[in-house]
Image 1 (cartoon, rainbow, N blue to C red):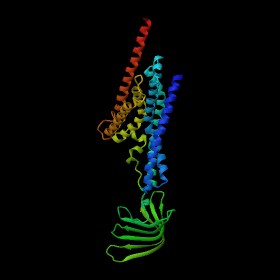
Image 2: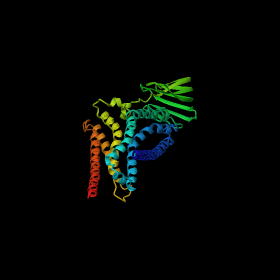
Image 3: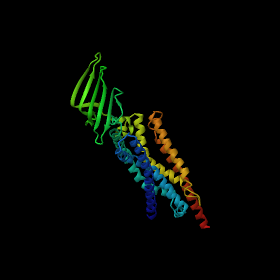
Image 4: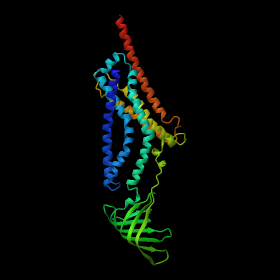
Length: 365
């Protein structure tokens, strides 16, 4: 059908244009934010693009519903403003037939969004967590900075180095470590470098240095020299994915009475469902009077969309805190908004057929 192809092509093109614009805005903001963090020495400079690329699928999933929502408003608003929809209705097309036209690309986006939120995004959150731990200053040994005394292990160990070369070689290293028996050890070395083992343990490898041991109850220092020594600095940071429920695989969120897991599972499903519900909202809110600007309906429709997502977020908090049962959860928000918008479309549809019947009676007379 020519009309179907025309409307779907306009919707898809507009959706792609809107999501590209929104992604450019989001990526530029992320780039500026991570660049400022990198300039402050909190993350490695090379990690900026890595962190953005890992987060990109998440922002695409978040932007798809609102991009499709705006695309429907703009495309159908233009059709109303140009009186094209008036001609379409006069040819026998109803509002529910328009809804069927919209649901063809909406169902495609629903499947894409479902794959993103159910399978890809949890893995992306895990990858982002790994990137954050391996490239930021959360990797404890990377706190070492030239000319500064850096404490580790709640102040029981401090490390100082005068300078660090571009290849990571440290010069004039000083280490102080407090022992469990209230003794202490001082280690000095002219050179050294950081080393991380496969299990995440972190060390400083020192060359041609000295160590001084102080024992409790003794005024003497035990002195020694070494050609090479490995000083343990910190163990790996434990990657507890359960601490971030967003990184938990979807298979672990189902068949559980944990409110946090139920809230996260329903939240993931809400984004694909939101594409269908936002389609109803956009179509129900796009109707305009003759000579009315095509952009007049954007603000009211956007307010309804914001209320819809705010209620979803609020319901997620309620479910997460155990204030509402899981069978109510976030589902009631989808049902309420879908039901109201379908009722509005039914009213519009009845008006069209009422006008047609009057026209038919006038023709008989």
